[in-house]
Image 1 (cartoon, rainbow, N blue to C red):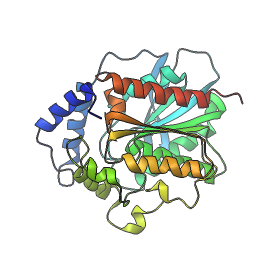
Image 2 (tube, rainbow, N blue to C red; image 1 turned 30 degrees about the vertical axis):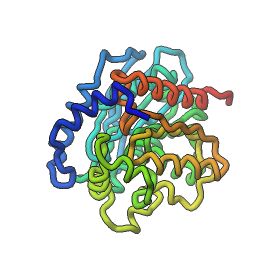
Image 3 (cartoon, helix red, strand yellow; image 1 turned 60 degrees about the vertical axis):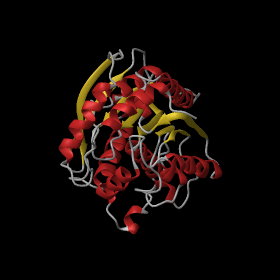
Image 4 (cartoon, rainbow, N blue to C red; image 1 turned 180 degrees about the vertical axis):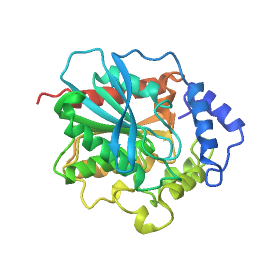
Length: 313
């Protein structure tokens, strides 16, 4: 299928620019470029009940969070959201529009997490921060949505990887979550998938980008890259995990490993909604203001999460 027209326009601009090599470029330069791209797809802020910046205690100091509350009476579900950006870029502002829409559409308190980032803080620092925040929220749920039985994790790209491994950790701690939303997740660092070749160039996230990002996050040691906290598809068992909502994109090098994770969850008896969106590329959640197809995909994924969080206790 051809690219969605809104996505094609974004790609024309991106492909016309000279991309900095990720492995050797100052990460702050990459972060500025990512914020510039996010601003280009921005629109008027989506209104929610309230937005408040704060911090949560972490293993190496306070972790910044942004708390979105819907215009609704409680008690409510709570969703902990981890932003994408290859564990290197991305922040609370780059995904503000996404988290506002998540809060509004799902009717949940959303806590966005600004974890430490590579290459200054490679694995396991981002994982440790996200786990610390999720544990804190679970232990203080009355300060958030107050529904102890309706705590979920969500994320896109690197954030989806973190959400998947946090869901596994919570299962292992006998504190199962109510749901997990994974948008175009990296699930198998060293897997060999056709989509990595089919979509190696021209679709924003290139195969070279992906190799550099994974190196800066987890290095080259197969023993580290294959750990379930890095490659969640490698978990000893995928049974007993939170119901999953998984979205992948046709023109994304990560497409096939996201679909493989969904298939493995289903084989383990999990509740899984999975959709591969034709005409879309990696990062489509942030593109919904410019692409009707991305907007429709975002709506469906958020609606599926909302259904799982709205079930009777």
